Amino acid sequence: MQTTPIEINLSLINQKVKFSCVSSAKADQPITVDYLPPLGDGEGFLGLELLVMSFAGCVSTGIVGILRRMGKSVLNYSMIATGYKLESPLVLEKIHFEVMVESSDLSDEDMQKGLSMAEKISPVWIALKNNVEVTWQYKILAS
View 1 (cartoon, rainbow, N blue to C red):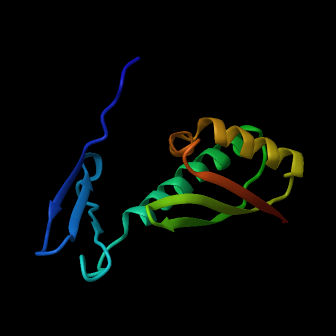
View 2 (cartoon, rainbow, N blue to C red):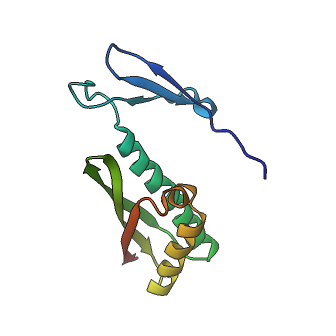
């Protein structure tokens, strides 16, 4: 099995723990990572925020792609993803997400199938499996 590297360059940019992170694939789009005071200044994304964002983006790519391959219209799509963390030890315990899809031809059965398939193909979801509980719900908005 061949692996493909994902190179992230991270540089400390202040005297606390504020970092600039950039993917070698998108060097012109840095992301600032920081932590809350007093360790940091709170001027960037927290690592767990980025993890939940990654999850939401990855899973949404899977869902929309699957629904479209099924021949379903996706006129509008949004997701609200909420991560729940434990404080001691500081760890992501659960992600709950709600998907809203506007479609003229999407059934509950189609949506259930799309979500089930996304769980099996979304790399971030697969990486979190057995470590983070994931729950979801959806709304289909008729167009």
